[in-house]
Length: 171
Image 1 (cartoon, rainbow, N blue to C red):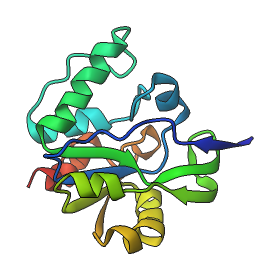
Image 2: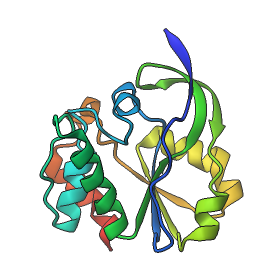
Image 3: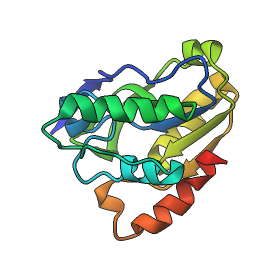
Image 4: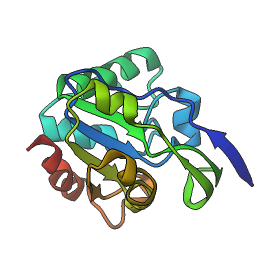
């Protein structure tokens, strides 16, 4: 069943952020956890840690949730990244991006004015498509489409290939 979702998570960024990474909309697991890419099978955090040579001490579904979130937030900021989603709201069925209707874009003006963002990466084709259509006219920063780190993408993108693809973020 499709639900109307208003994005519940604040963006992660600071004045030294130079690269913005955008998903589409937090999954039900991420909304429940109160942080990005927290589904136990999503590979976003292991991929990003590998790209930067970092080690994650806590799993996405670890009982030490607060430490897992703090370590992921620190990883983003330490590497001058910003993390958010393209959409501020939409109608969606579960975590199925293909089911999205009535998309409303986030307003990136505060992040762009308060940081040095010059590069944008989208984590999957849906976030890329919505960014290019709804956000590019406002931001003026072209985006690069990276493969989705979702468990649904495991068959098409083995972990080593994801790490190579995401390596452009560290360049």
